[in-house]
Length: 289
Length: 268
Image 1: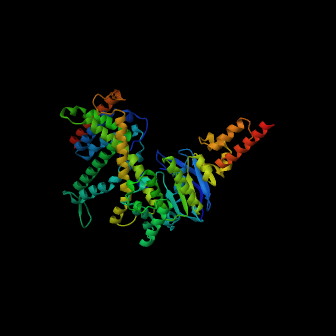
Image 2: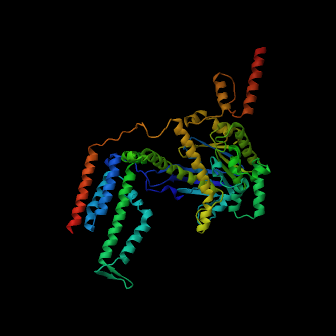
Image 3: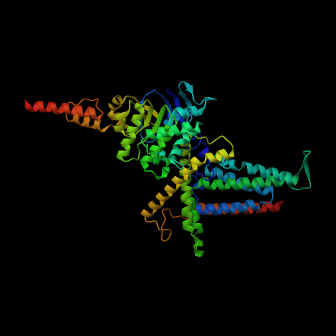
């Protein structure tokens, strides 16, 4: 299961005075089992790129391939793409509409034309996955829930289609710290269970913690592509793009500026702990001399 | 999706004399031109109006393509007007015998007359909205209607409601587009099926759209209140409208147009 974008360019409202090119000549392969973080400044084309992955937007030029097949060629069933690639928009709770949570989650599977029994099973499974096991919740109106719960319901609605690739556009935006952490753990858990995850994010700390690959967008093109280690080594380049590095990286940079021997490739909290402990022990040894 | 190609009421930004005209004058002149269009009693009288349209369009720097786009939603009505008039109007001079119907010269003239009238009405109106930002337009309207306050007509409130409505059309369209995409991602189908199926398919779009519209309305009311909005009384304005030389010239040219139209109508 692999998605490939070949020379993809997308222009909004071509030929009008409002014409704007959101992404230009993007080449990207999303491999099975990856946790890919999509990073970039506002307006760098991340969301446009995300919408090409499941065929919601068709490239102005270029091709999008799902397992080697062009999804925009004639006769290709778009529903196939929608089933395999689940897309969770920014603030997905704004798309809820049904009378009950269960009915809303069932919307996707119903559109796939599945039998009742399977729909019910998938709804239960999806609600379990997002941590809304309570039987009462399934029968509540989605508009009675808290913001964090609503977002979980919306994500369950996408999960109920059992996508192989999950694309999430800033899934933690606007949540309080606890809901935020729960949301990220939920996504991480789905990845651990074998889902390929593409997550648009502004938080470098989250990228450092979870992603196996990071793609940095700038002005509609891919500026950097690599593991988080490789990306975060270029702190100055990221800063030039108006982006940040994880707070752990900042700590490392400060320590090195102070002349302390802190290794360059730390960007996770555990690594920072180790490095700090090593520094502390060394300092103690010096003090004892 | 097909939601982002609506021209009627879409402002075309450019720097031109027409753009800079006082919105009040523009509204009054549009009404005057509409009167002129209805005064035109024969085809010859349409010539000065059409010429006026061409000149104003050139002056406004609005591309002809944008203007023609405004006619597109009306093509069905236009065709119906033309065809119905052509076949059903009585006349004396037969022009063309089609076997099942005879086209009369008078009918053809009337068909062209009514179609032209419609086309010109739409084009002039689009010209106003294309060259005037919606906010300026409602500003002008408010000022024009303000004398009616004497009879307790809420001019300011009406204008405020209109500008808020206009302001939120693109926002709501964007929102609709987003929700449509989100539901499409969940396998919803808005484009195929019969009328009932399609109407049903709108529910997942309309419910979230209404929810968000109400949320936005509440937020906006709160934000206005927080900035001490209390209606039109004693409110000063950021841009004070003032008539200038170009506005008087525009009035004079339009008056000339009406005279020409009336003379052309008499000359026949």
